[in-house]
Image (cartoon, rainbow, N blue to C red; front, side, top):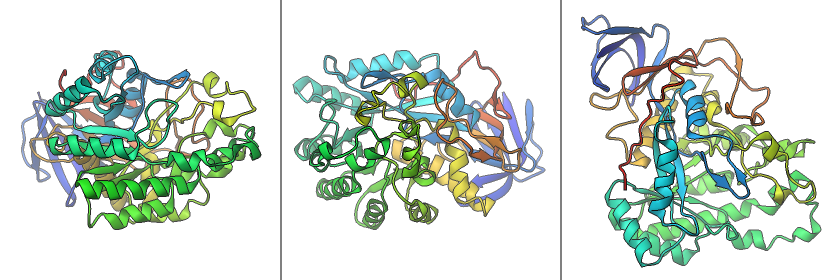
Length: 450
């Protein structure tokens, strides 16, 4: 099957050009000057639109248990809202449970996603045990294509905390195998030292005082030192503070370090926690104060990529806290369906730049950090034909972060972006924000069976 996407403005790494894109056997077969004669089985008209590589959300949580609550979005529902908004690849997480090997945990996730996901899927792995067999499994996984590993400098009670000694061992042993490391940076000792007895724990706004900005800053500084020492690739997830973002920006010249922030840290602030229903915006790190400077940094390129940390809970679970201690509330918010819209908003005053930045920070850079740049992330001959035909002048519509039964994270936010066509590995899968075959998921698992 050959498909020709014609009359669009192709968003390439080096700039925007009027090009026709020929797709064959799931890959980009040719980038053609407009009007070039090409034989194709079907034509897609992209007139008046940008044609971008499919977006990648590098940081989502799906079909898993977080504390006492099960997440609202399965691979099916999460990938559906993603695809409707031009996101063709999801990077989710597998965390080793107390009574299982990491390979067992991974196989469970693979069973959940197989045959149900509308997007392609890649997993970051979080090991929690480090005995002899665990190291053997980690080495085997790294050898078979699992190269991204996530660690936390907090959450001791949940059993996923890694101290500096553990991180040093992991960096030393897995770094030479090509592993890349994602780290949630909040210093657990700083947060443990907060005097909670003198805080109003019934107020959701207290969440930010329990997890102060200094905790993120201290953890980032320590991790940078360790990554520099071990010379390993480091990616800091969901940066929420200006100071940490500035430190990471300065570190780029001396270390293989990247970072991300999330739309909630750019467009929402701590006043959302002060609402009567403020617990619905609880996430970690917390929403912070004025966001203007963080948006300035984002516009200037301080963040290598933008991702959601989508961690959606059902309404009844989000509202199930005891109203006495904010720490009993489900900690996470939805964001998948809002990602490209809120990313575009950063550069909306210059549409061409907005298109280029989306191609870089939602496609090219995530693909590189995930280690799939040989398949995804750019409009280049030989790569998967994951294509987004984007009209930035569509009707104004409300943002929808999730299709599950969740509270909307961005009430009152709207967007004019319309996804006229979305192709996944060359197959048209969505048009005008609707799935073409909602009962027939065609997403694949990008990493092999361990």
